[in-house]
Length: 234
Image (cartoon, rainbow, N blue to C red; front, side, top):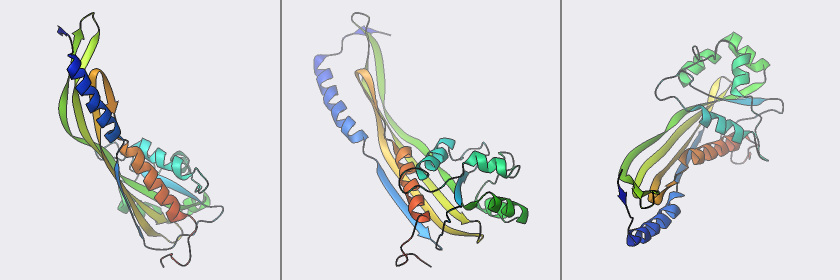
């Protein structure tokens, strides 16, 4: 570690870069798509459960993302009744425990089509299963940060580091009663995150996963909520 002094001009330039990056850091590009294959009709005593793959392998959808979607879907004036994943797993033991749970939508279809399991799911009032696949990834890191001990023993850093973050999730909606997939929804979000240091490192993080969660959750609400008969697809 070296002792030095950050030049005043460098600080001024750094502050301008920091201000520009701070404004840019909040920019997240999002894309939402949905395909409806059949009408939905959620009864007053029926609920929805949101699931994802639980085997601890590469490519597994993050637990906090599934929890985020569940919390969002069950809140607000347009809330949809949700049975938590834990309640669902306990009620259908042992078919959805981590060691035996489905790995993908095809596996899920085979499991819930078994008469005993389908009957149990119907007993606990679950009408729709929402299966989520996807991840948030970090890539394309550029730049560097250097930290030193300044005059007077005060630590200081100088530099610029950036990276891309992208979220890509897809939700398949399964109708337990009709034993069919009624729609597929997807949410993508991408943005650039920064760490800028002019004496003090300041991170500016693109909240791509949060945006993907909010958008996908709203799509699920819209999909399962009351439909306009003039626009609903058969």
